[in-house]
Image (cartoon, rainbow, N blue to C red; front, side, top):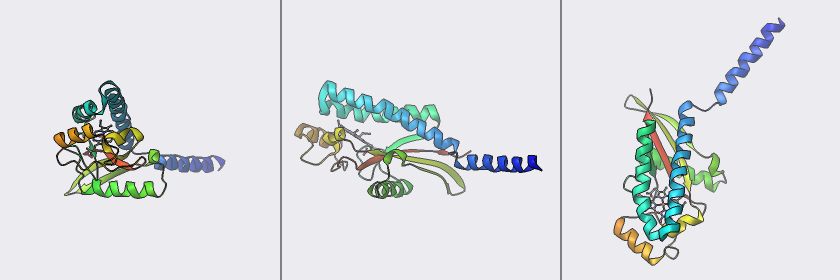
Length: 189
Ligand code: HEC
């Protein structure tokens, strides 16, 4: 009798632990975020320090897509960055990404800690299942040179941005705004 009560309790406990444990693909996506940020952030900082913001634009333009491509190949996920005000060639969000970016904005406005904010969903469409993941990218002080207000962006940076990104919309941000998001997807097995 005692034993069976204990085993029922243990079975309940196991179920509970399983329910609160994130999906393996969710954990995978979190680690790809770390890898992406861990490569891009130091590259940007080093480029800013070495050549200033105008030179660093080139790094953002070539390095960020290159890292995304490497990580896509390495992890068999489609790895990208998107924004409601896109700059890069692949940064325009689809419907699911647009809804998620808007939800991130609402969550941040409601005081949610961006560190804990993410979206993981298995999306069904046309009989296929896609695993989708997004994690917000927050605007820091360092970002304002290239993503801040008209006044905050130095004239040479403005000129270079206009030359490389004639349709740029990625300005007017303040520290603490959601600048965009990492967005990853892969087919569900
Ligand atoms: C030296 C200028 C510069 C600085 C500083 C900078 N960025 Fe960018 N950012 C860019 C450029 C250029 C792109 C477009 C890259 C491309 O072509 O894919 C970009 C693209 C992005 C994107 C992808 C979405 C989009 O709109 O293309 C995100 C997200 C982003 N930046 C976040 C940040 C954050 C967060 C910071 C601060 C930590 C930052 N950036 C600092 C120049 C900069």
